[in-house]
Image 1 (cartoon, helix red, strand yellow):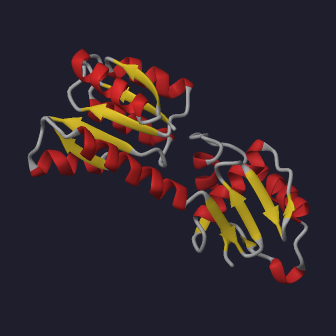
Image 2 (image 1 turned 30 degrees about the vertical axis):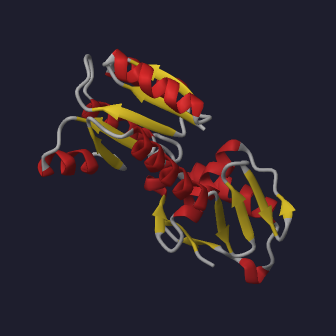
Length: 220
């Protein structure tokens, strides 16, 4: 598991890096918010440890930026701020957890393990006879592997994660394609037709239905 530490106190950075590497984690460090932001743009991390008060870009600003692109990576604030309002503010912008300085290293490692366990519980997505192994990036339908393109895979995962909800074409374009301007949403139908053909499901296994004029909904 790859952890990013964004912290400007060098002593804390060295302490955390050494301790977490001894626990078996791969560690990358940034000493200001902007450097952390640039690293996040280039690489996918499994968890982020983030100081609140950082030079160039605050931890709060960085957390907001992370959540605009990524809603799944666990993010833990390490901070001396401890008022209820500040805690709520951090959680509102997308933090998963909050540890007050000074903190116990044992407590930190236990919290990290808890977040990784929660992630692993979500590594298999299911929709009827369709099974998606998120960690291995594999899709099975009735036990047979389905070779999807990257975009087809992202679209299928999005619909399954939002099972039971109508996903509009506009939402899909924004969340899966990351396009936030007027765009021909008809491209989604092309990808959906390709996904359905590759899944090769029976008539009674019509798990993804078209909501005419709106979008799609996935249901068992």
